[in-house]
Length: 209
Image (cartoon, rainbow, N blue to C red):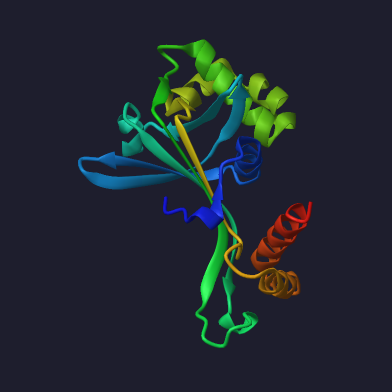
């Protein structure tokens, strides 16, 4: 990912918090020399110093057959158009503010017939993350139904080998311009724009200390 110094973010705790808050991610791999992407919910966990991403794909998804190679996982959040009229200099151009995190790693494949315990753990982790109250419902379903569902997916666990964060929040502009942009976004009717405004405000406040 292109990351000018002003926008680089390498604080792992901060990146993990962002990933958890925006855990519906884009999984990208190369199949027969062509980029292929799937959009999937993930569970983000810390095991010691290791960051792990847990999820699954439909077995019919061609990407499930490409889980033995390095993948790119993209997490994105709020984003907003930034008008050049918000800058002090008349000769300025439009841009876009956003936050993105890229995670890389080689997945460990989880299959029901090879590792039923790992498959059950993956399912439980997903349920705990996205709807904990559903767990008793899931386990009350017939064994045949649950096995049929789990046989239709390929689970995976990615140990992240490289993590890149980009917080493009006008840090390359003056404090006055950053405050002007943030204030304008916070007054927007667009929730995404307000989200960027909040991130900018927090970033400005953190730099005051």
